[in-house]
Image 1 (spheres, rainbow, N blue to C red):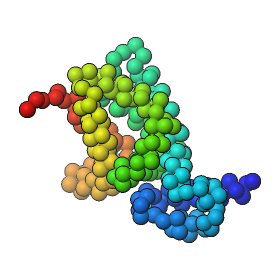
Image 2: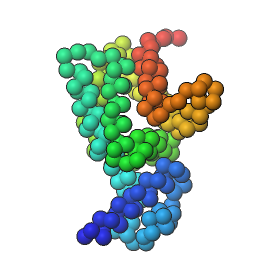
Image 3: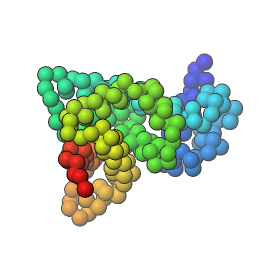
Image 4: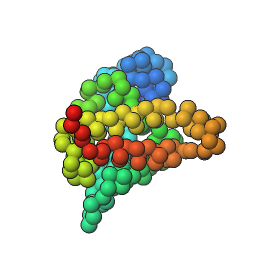
Length: 212
C-alpha cells in the first residue's frame, strides 16, 4: 500500500514540475513516466488519463487554496463592505500558505493556473467550477457587490482580464524582478510581486463603464 502511495506521489510530483515548466500540451506521458521512474501502466492505474492527471496535480493546490480563500473573503465581509483592494488582498495569505505545502508552491500553483488559461484546457474550467464552484462564487459575489456599477457581462470580461494579468505577471516574474533589481535597486519576492499587482487589478475592475 505504501509503495502504491509513493508511486502516485512520484507521478504527481514529476507531472507538476513538467507541467509548470513546459505546459500541459508539450508534456507527454512518456516524459512524466521517465522523470518519475515509473511505467505507463502505473499512470493509467492511478489516474486513467492525462486529463485526470492534470486535474489531480491542480487539485493538490486547489483543495488547500480554495477553502482558505473563500473563508478569508467571508470573514472580510462580516460587519463591513470591503473594497476591491481588500478583497484581492485577502487572497494573499492563502496563496502564500501554499509555500508550506510545497517549496515555491505559490509560484508553481499560479504557473499551473496560467498554463491552463493560456492553453485553453477547457476540461480544467469544468473541473474547477464543478468541484470548487461554491468557493469561487464567494469571491465573484464579493467582487460584484463591491463594484455594483459594473454590469454582469462587463464583470465577466474584467475578471478574465484580471486572470490574464496575473498569468502574465507570474509567467514573467523572474524577468521582472531581475529588471527591477538592476534598474531600480528593488528586491522583490513573490509576495511583493503579488501585492504590487493588486492595486492595478482593483482599479481595472472598478473603472466605470464608458459608452461609445
